Image 1 (spheres, rainbow, N blue to C red):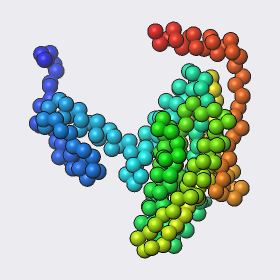
Image 2 (image 1 turned 180 degrees about the vertical axis):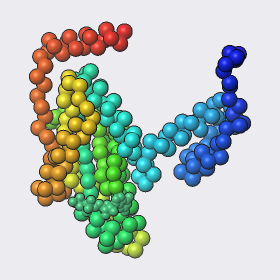
Image 3 (image 1 turned 90 degrees about the horizontal axis):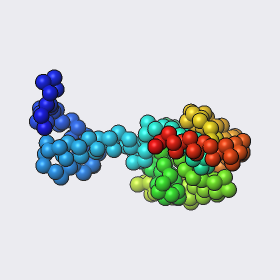
Image 4 (image 1 turned 30 degrees about the vertical axis):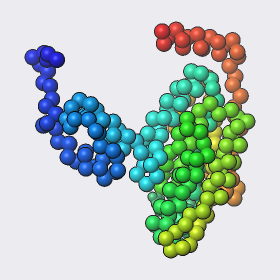
Length: 240
Ligand SMILES: Nc1nc2c(ncn2[C@@H]2O[C@H](COP(=O)(O)OP(=O)(O)OP(=O)(O)O)[C@@H](O)[C@H]2O)c(=O)[nH]1
């Protein structure tokens, strides 16, 4: 490839990649098999770093930064397609007492067990994230209102049924409270508002006794079928 006089092409061998490679190795990421410092190898290193920076180290779930990006993509998608989407916020009940009674390492095992239980209950297309210490969020695209309560209840039951075996021989069971809200259809909204609405329901689930799911009533769309058609037409023209 020819370069213009102003462009300086990088020499891959001069890049300081030791720390990046150490981080990948320490995280157990597979190092690229391609010829070191080839274009394919560099791309694979960059891809692996992106993957690492979007995951939560303890659970392997999507981390908060990546979750916020996914949520805002979902807001756009719902506004364009009008498909229903549900956001669930989850919080482990009385988690502080697990740490206080059994230690922080036991608390970590409980967080990992809850992560696996939630992940195994939802569809591969859903995004499961760890958004805080003992807080999780699930984005469920294309989730009709009638299915929302069922899926939230299924997650609650699956978590309550999981048993965490501590190295000491003690076994623990955790429960979660869940709050859910549907994205407003056909309307541009913010992911922050959506999270606040789901959080309010989570607060209600805690206040009503924990180990339960509370979902906001889905707001009925005020847009007529004709208007929806026009919205679609505009969107399709825009993208052409
Ligand atoms: N083991 C462990 N504990 C964490 C981690 N992150 C946050 N925590 C702990 O999570 C606990 C959160 O406790 P609270 O917010 O008081 O809530 P709670 O005890 O679960 O009570 P409710 O949510 O009201 O049912 C605190 O003790 C934090 O130290 C982590 O990564 N690992």
